[in-house]
Image 1 (cartoon, each protein chain N blue to C red):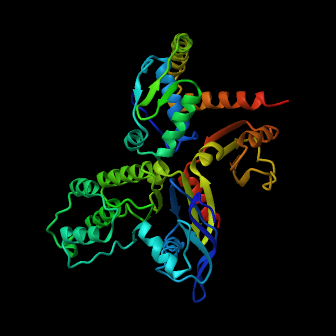
Image 2 (tube, rainbow over the protein chains, first blue to last red; image 1 turned 90 degrees about the horizontal axis):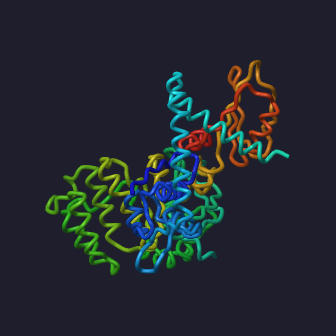
Length: 131
Length: 297
């Protein structure tokens, strides 16, 4: 799978890897039993610190999405639960697609739409924490 | 002494006449990580590195590298066997050819890796029979890097390793660095290339006028540092800049920007009470962190 990392983004790089692997599992790009590259290989491929890869793999292992077998590699674990989540994700993505296309048609730029989504998510998070 | 630290200094100071080149530096570089050392020209980075390796004398304070005291000449001599160092000027014996200096250096170290040597010689396209004095600056840098990466030291100290390298070689250098760390090596390097630091570093230390201004994990900067921009219909109200988490407040016309180094959500919540027309929270890259801290100082 192809990972696209942005070292200047406001998310730790390990969590970008985690999110993208999760997304790949949800959309079926990665399937049960698929082998991920070793820590050293992936670190050199992505040109990131190996500690970042180790952290991402351990988070994925913790989430039950990766099984690390010593000396053998890191295998994707995608159970049925994940597959139904995959369908939900596809449906949600279709809705987002309609919304975004609508906004683009109204003349909003990518940048503006990005900001609106970010602001909405941000307000949501900060409101949740309000008493 | 801390075994988790490859480098640890206590109030390390170097004075040149009236100038404090390095001032009461408490530096900590964890083992098996990539730590970047940033700072403007003349900030004291190279002086610090040279004190760690016993090349420059220490005015006061001290420290340890790989558990050995840097101020003790015998221990410093020992520690240098476990450290590979690429100096800022990449000085090498200019009368030797590429192949001669490789053979010479190989004979000095037991940890020499012939496979790494062969691979880098090919990658960097170094001409084996050419004299060092006729090599370009970039080629000399590549040769110095080859000599460092062909060993398996515990600690690699690189002083501006990417300076003068072409983009392909920079990419190869960064891959070598992360590969070395995957093998358990600790890397401490200085650089002016913020974009490359941001890609591979676990930690960053920012030095200015001999003092350490930032010592942070890059993931913490990504997670915690935020620029909060508030726009108002009228001139912005006054804000107490000593609020925890706010590092800086700037007002420009009807806009106010806050730099939060922690709890950006809580800070933005407070900002909502100022009833801004709009509020925007954006991540802060390492470049901005660097410029803001060094300019403020």
